[in-house]
Length: 188
Image (cartoon, rainbow, N blue to C red; front, side, top):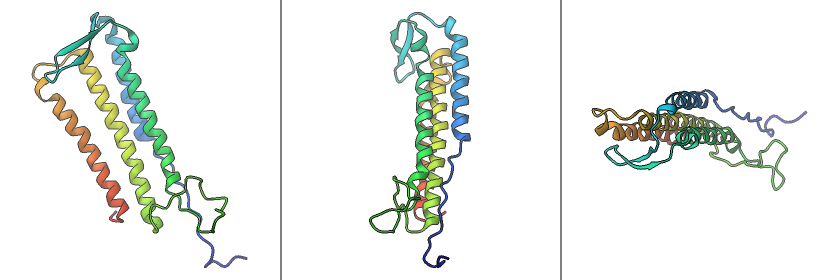
């Protein structure tokens, strides 16, 4: 029988929340459906870049791949955020203090985020939430840009669309980063 004062509690690796990435994929899929619906009516050549006033300034020949490029990029970004979020708990495992030979349960990616396991767990959870939030925010940003490109921007919306989109995106990023910093400092 082992002495309970010398054994270390086994740390469980938290699973990454799947729902934020699924929400982001639903946003990308909805964008794909709209894109496929409006593709036949897209002009040839089609606008591919817009100036600060949201007026087209670059045109290209109509192609399905080019038309759906925002959807392809959105899917790739969501996948990258999901993969990083899935790997994040591995970085939250504490390193082995068993000397030069780590235990069999220690992750090869092990790092010690904090000497206090509860702070490490909170930081890992906040980081996974940040990645989920960014997955949704990035998918929404790409979707709105794609939809306004495909459907046009109403004149009443043109002056404030880009600043509002960027403020929402970076506001979401800032709130998520504050959560991570607070978790790292053990502030909850």
